[in-house]
Image 1 (cartoon, rainbow, N blue to C red):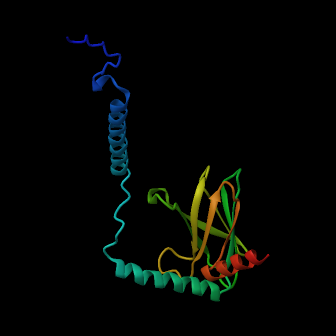
Image 2: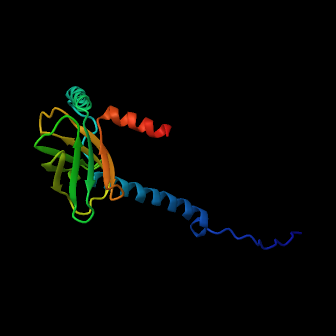
Length: 186
């Protein structure tokens, strides 16, 4: 005699009605969406070639920059740059053994070269130079001051985060390192 079979309480549901397969498929689709959005952003914000074709010439130019900083150190040049928050005037007080008629100031944005700005500062009195600056200068900038646009004898460099810093000291590179070491000892 055959025994009657008992009805099974465990019903097997099809895979498409269960949670875990859809969770795994969702992870796959979300990774595809995120990677596609990153690809679109990288294409839209192209920042040029990373590798320079004229790397040898670029390397020689670095030596010229070092020579300009060395000349600034030999002339005992330092500059104090201030930006007036109300009028946006850029005032530079230059001390040392050089007093050119004009100074050229380059504000270099670290990541986007289309935001770089250049200014000509007029000599107004003993070592003081002034020009009208941009309104609402914000974020981190590299600063360079030199006496001529091309073939300058010397150059002073600095770095500032605006509007947090209204006054910035620009020094020759070697003097800057010595100043940082002095601050670390204090």
